[in-house]
Length: 253
Figure 1 (spheres, rainbow, N blue to C red):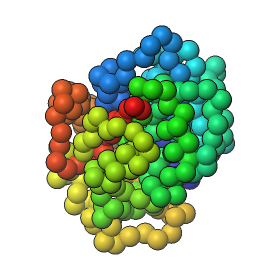
Figure 2 (figure 1 turned 180 degrees about the vertical axis):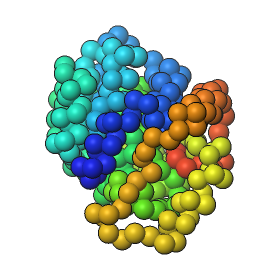
Figure 3 (figure 1 turned 90 degrees about the vertical axis):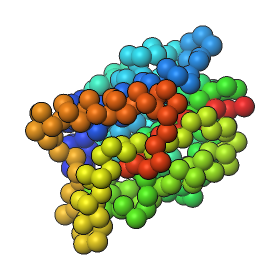
């Protein structure tokens, strides 16, 4: 991800509706599907600037909490937010030996940068480190035909379908327990904007701009409440037939 986008991320991820909605959903999925025995070992694969790690620390207080990212800048911001975190630089496309089993692995919008095929070997290595009954949670953008200027700016190379994600998790030797599209309620609103950008794309990465900017406070608050309502539906086992993103949970047999 471009340095300019990383700076925007760390400035707005505490307040922006998109990030608040995602963290709320992660909390609900963890509460529903993660049942650790004793002190947990938790990894954020692609930790960005650290908001998800802060969430994991607050909600789980795990015995071991770590995260990796390819960006030096992102890890600097992450270290400021989580001084005692086990942070290191790594590319999700490469195999890694964690040195011990993991009970929970979370990866949000990271595979979309590398692509499912390119990340396959690295993700298999991570799946192999999961303990029996361990949980992996993936969050990815949906539908390749929605690829737009936003994706160019944040370096998203592949958007996925629900069936692709299900097959991918099974190929890693994991058992999917929940997969659904999300941001369904915003789909009709954002779709025309994304299609316009997709049809008239900006091909220069340097000038491409993401959708990450703070909206009017009233709009931001309304969107947060809307996503929390969606998340409640998902946490109760509901599934959406379409959406802008995909949430997927799978366990290690």
